[in-house]
Length: 511
Image (cartoon, rainbow, N blue to C red; front, side, top):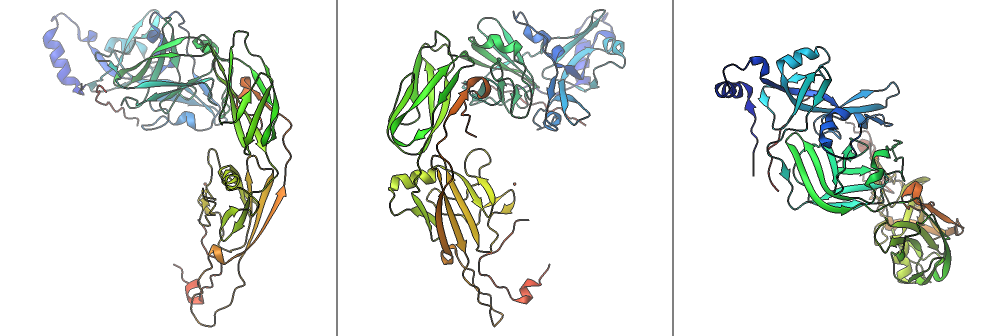
């Protein structure tokens, strides 16, 4: 473990004055503080001898709040920004420790980059130089840079945040990330900006295939096109402690605007057609489906004894040059292998146990008294358990889904099943009490169910997938709780009862 201690400036000054020639003027002594450094100035010296050095612009955000979260612990801690009239904003650069002479600071006047003095020597800082040519900022001065031990790079090629996404497995302890650099074996360096590229320890970027992301931000890809086909050998994080480097040997496979169109079809045994377009001539195709029982050729997918569901085809390049391209397709059935009984879904009389279990596994949406709840994906609400039991205490967005009346219309939809399971749950007739005793509530097993099934959709005719628009996603893929229980009658007596930014420097340590 190695430490960088915070040293009171007065002590440092005394040491410096005792060790330098007496002729040195006080004007030549370094003073320390922080400055708001624009991205381009922050990264300019970090490119070093990189062959692809470029100007790094401010980041314009289409969101109305995320860009402003720059406080300690915030999404983009250490950045500084500017608001627009419409509530959107720009992340302009980084507030980072600097060192310069008093004379240089005085020469800047009011244009001093928001300089705020500190009374200690920061563990890492940039040296500011002021001359007739303007102001420049050095690379980070870090006498003890860290190389992470035990960390690994995981590169993904299917992400809504661009074309590529890097996660660091077993990441080093380093606090907030003030900047990041990707360095490749061919001598190039790529600078990363917050929100577009740096997000919660991840790094993402576009190389020109996916050019926008879910928040509505247009992705800048021109400076990253040359990353495709390169090998990343270092990822360098810039923190208040200086540099932390993760060494790697990660190839960035080439992406392309290819398209896969797969016809949806019936489950069971059969085949469906497939067309491919936009594939490079030197792409040597290898096919795989995320389930057994499939055989794939260049024009069709055949299958045997396949249950209804959505499946994913992956096309890989045998030579490893290109990124995988994926496409989803649905094999469906008009059958309904489930029915309702005593508070849960159970197997229908004429259904196989495997088909019933498959229906429950594929539940995609549950509608309760007209309100729809997604049962899978991001923000899903778990209403029906893996064994089919309905959770009548489930809540969503702070509200109980079931109002306690005991009367519920429930519709259950599952991917691959064209028939919707409709359930009508009715409370038993209430008997008014003749004494001030509370009638015990009914349980889900004391309600009278009515179960019906309705076919709401036919098999889709096509499932077009374009890697240019969605990284290979399927085109047809698409928070005062209320309380109460059925049959509760409360006595009247019960019913009427009322009743300025701080920079935190962290100790470095080898991992």
